[in-house]
Image (cartoon, rainbow, N blue to C red; front, side, top):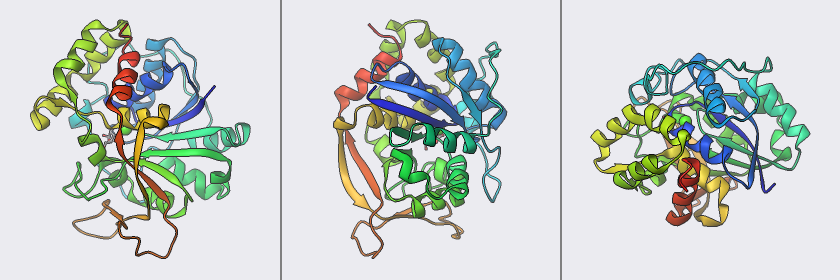
Amino acid sequence: MEHTLLIDTDPGVDDALALLMALRAPNARVIGLSIAAGNVGLQHTVANALKLLDVVDQDVPVFAGCAHPLVQPAIDAAYVHGHDGFGDTGYTPSTRQPSAEHAALAILRLSHEYAGELTLVMLGPLTNLALALRLDPNLPKRIKRLLIMGAAVNARGNITPSAEFNVAFDPEAAQVIFSEWPQLELVDWEATLAHPVSRSLFDDWLGQGDPVARFYDAISLQTRAFIRGLHGEDFHSADALAMAAVLAPESVRWAGNFRVDVELAGALYRGATRVDWQHRDTRPANVRIAERIDEVSFHALLRRALGVA
Ligand code: BDR
Ligand code: CA
């Protein structure tokens, strides 16, 4: 299998689309879902992950992680994703159960079992991974690839004027990862804005797809209306774009490698990321920033996620 994936996620409507892309990709095997709090509280993000596995009828272990950021409390994004994170459709909960193992411990265990093979995909706040890294600083040596959806590389944020949600939810965790992980890949919020999908096209796919598309149509209805209010006829899905970069790395044009730091203290800029575009820092550049992802390949992955023939 080309990609062996461990996905850390806070589903969340765009997380759900990204997870469908991965779970339905012929070139990927998902060996676990570690769950973060973020878009909504942990009990909902865990329940949503379990439900999504029902929808695709696949058995993948689900590991519940940290219910709160490392240091300071944060506000969720229920106003975007619904109180339950899946558009408040009142779906029948899954009877599946999460594993008893904590997400941070599962990340470490699986990194040993799949040493050198594993791609870690981070679609939510970085709390679980920061904790895992603190428990075992040698973790990066066993990971083939780490791709993070997060940050706003020119400080044009979404949750505050300057900060992106996943980083702003747990800035300390993000700073642990950005300052200590030797080399990671980043798909940021501004890249998301640069890759709109036309609403009518997306609606066509939802109409043409299989029962998975009908589930996605229902859970994403509220969020799509919210995005429409903000961006008009364009639909954006941050986590789905990040998953496209994971599944089709050849379709990514990279801006290059840069040093990225997280602002922790600022009253206006807490959670913002500073990219050293001019390579002034003497520390090695550690973040490979995605600039462009080929539209044809992104759309093909979205269609397959929704079961469009
Ligand atoms: C990120 O924040 C969350 O609300 C989304 O699920 C995505 O991971 C975008 O900034
Ligand atoms: Ca997410």
